[in-house]
Length: 490
Image (tube, rainbow, N blue to C red):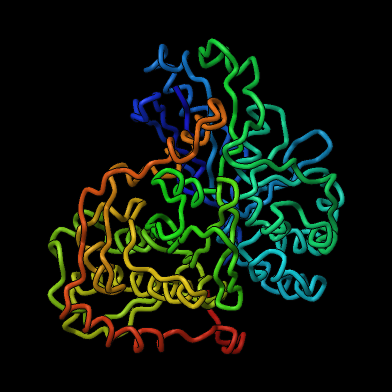
């Protein structure tokens, strides 16, 4: 048996998987985000640990025999958030999350200090990454920065609590801006630009490698007959790629979770940081992922449902399974700023084209289309690197919607495939990495692709209408940095 633990932004999800790769059980525990100021986002690492323990306790209560047979544990999780630990391995402050935009000025400072940043990391300095957050802490909370003895990313902190060891995998480390992505090692120059050294960083491993064992007392708590091996694991998107078998060039997929992305595995780095393409190490050796990323995807549907006082299902039901035409309303999904292609943490959402005739259906469809248009921006940034994207698999909670996948197929003008178990991709990928760490099997033998349960093809008339709408949709974005501070209201 293997456990896959996914530390998400909105919940911890833990699954129990047998040797035939069947999901025996899953449990989740919700998380909340603290917003101390507009544009900021934080979480207390103690809440992660409580949530992880709650899911494992629940599995122990209901599946004691299976939990006793667990041989390996895989971790996946939200990327980019630094957990700052003191000399006693205690967090010094809440974790600044991936969607926090406070460190815009520090990105400029970091690139000035380290001119080779984009070449070495394959990425542009953006507020979402960990390194600019440390520059911010050094400037605004110097006592905390001085007291920092170890910097861990979210899932590495969970590993530290579970095993007592400070170890990180290279895929998650790629999102720090401290990693040389080609060498798959910490960059001493990058660390120095942030006022850090290797002594403050965890040991690096590949995602499928052993990376510690569960503490004896915790193995006893969950009824495990031996101390399971903990795999290196992966960031959420690399783990999702492993979960759906996207381990070779050409296996492009898109994610419709809290955030969204178009992601392509590659066997050589062809970075495009100027177009805000992310370049990360994959969770398997000698492979990388290139991604166009957006900060708000399925969370946009959750937002409009909350705003209108309805459930998501109630909003989607009247729209059917495919649109007859684009909505007369347009929506910018920049509710928390945006990454690809704008790198603008101050960007905000917008509804355009409202009239007395506008009804709820038009607004809801516009939200779905706005996310799809933003994913088209991500796709185009990737194709600028030379990638050819002829179809894509869809994972994440938003992939449940026939309507949304039909819209995406016509906006992107490519077939979109829904996968079996597409909503547990990251946790399932983590469980696969756990198995690889335990057994040493061939990666291709374990990381097979799940069945495609449906394919959504572009409809020529609708695809043409969306192609005409897309340039006008792009014109709606106006960088807020061009607006005077007196007129900015959050």
